[in-house]
Amino acid sequence: MAAIEVGRVCVKTAGREAGENGVILDIIDKNFVEVVGVNVKNRRCNVSHLEPTENKIELKSDDIEEIKKELESLE
Image 1: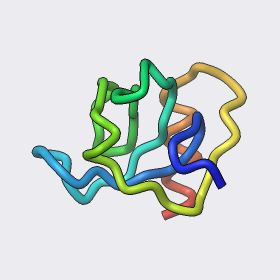
Image 2 (image 1 turned 45 degrees about the vertical axis):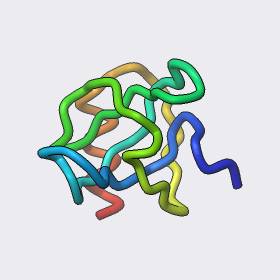
Image 3 (image 1 turned 120 degrees about the vertical axis):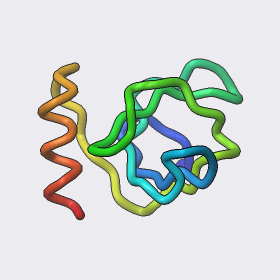
Image 4 (image 1 turned 45 degrees about the horizontal axis):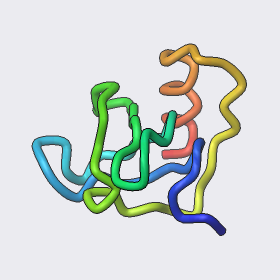
């Protein structure tokens, strides 16, 4: 299992959104990824501030609302 990969569900461990679940949308470089979640804004995040889970979502489209609904169904 790759820890940091597109579609991986993770928990933010730092910042105002700490403790919230998010999905990795894009890997920017070795230190940063783009994350979105139900209570997480679509933004860049340092990978050291994420705790990957064993869950993964298959990203079928770029529709943020659809991704959020799929994430809600996992919770």
